[in-house]
Amino acid sequence: MNKDNNQWSTKLGFILSSAGAAIGLGAIWKLPYVTGQSGGGAFFLLFVCFTILIGLPMLISEFIIGRGTNREAVSAYKALAPKSLWTWIGKLGVIGCFLLLSFYSVVGGWISVYTGKALLGNVIQSGHDPAELFGMVTGNPWITIVGLLFFTLFNVLVISLGVQNGIEKANKVMMPLLFIFFIILVVRSLTLDGAMEGVKFFLSPDFSKITGESILYALGQSFFALAVGFSCMVTYSSYLKKDESLPYSAGSVVIMNIFVSLLAGLAIFPAVFAFDFKPEAGPPLLFMILPAVFGKLPFGELFFAIFLLLFLFATLTSSFSLYEIIVAALVEKWPNARRKIAWSIGVIVFLASIPAALSSSSLSDMTIFGKSIFDATDYLVSNILLPLGNLLIAIFIIHKMDKNLVKSEFLQGSHISELYYKVWRLLMLIVVPIVIAVVLIYTASQYNG
Image: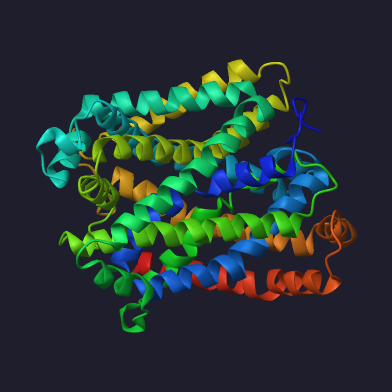
């Protein structure tokens, strides 16, 4: 058992923390721009289907592995399959989280900078066009590095405090506030002139715009948004008490994630069309739209600053889970050194993130397979390593893990029917691995082509 495992104090704390791990850049930042690039409503529908049919069973699987062993990711697989290659699933998760943090922290840094500027009244009232301001922020190496440093420091401070005193307390306060302010933003966005064109784009499926790459991105986004594939949720669920229902907890996380993803689309796309932006603008989309929307509100700068603070927190709650899988794996070996480990990992992640942070400025001419360092790392993590990690976990839990333990963990803590267990097992046995394998084969064929 984790040496510093003081467990989640309540079921709500676990659900909010798990939702916080999922609800961040995936739902609020990445989904809108990937949807914009991939055809709108049809892509969002694919994302929802993948999230329910693939993401939810995978989330339950990680919960089962974590609580079934009461160990963090690396030790969990060692306990279930000692001295075998299966132990590399946990190690892949640590490596994947590290790579994910190397570009995720960069966006967290952008949000940190925007939050600071908004608090000083230097975004909406700056006089700069939102697109121009975004270019000024990301194109300045010193600004991006300072933002990255702040974001990394905040993560380290919370992670060093542990589960209950750090991660859980933060999530219980800020996640509900994020929902409230998001709904305010959606209401304002929907009342803009021309907003309905954005709603139509987001919610009306046009399957003629779906390509093989769109399907790949939709699956990758469902994994990215639920934080599954790198065993982050194995570590989180290892802190969970035995009297909690894993399917209900996973279902709550998925519902909250889809709801926030829907809110994100309804906040962004009506404003995109109202202000004549391009929905396929890419990663800068959120940073260009939000200032324009809040600029139309009374006390817009204040509301924008508050929202950015909450958005920053949502980003942090996701990165907490990425840091925790790495830190927890080392704390297993050195149980009394959590603070030192957290700070050491923070320094390493900061240094590793610098190339991606400079990919829009000093290193803008450096490309990997035609992509910037930032975009190449994002593609590797979201479209290759995450699906690969999920495929390995799916095979492991069905073919390697003890069936009685799996069934016991699935049913424990609730009066759920065995029918749900049979449906979940069927999905994990056939549907999930086949879909993921097909997507990975497609990715390989595109690479070879």
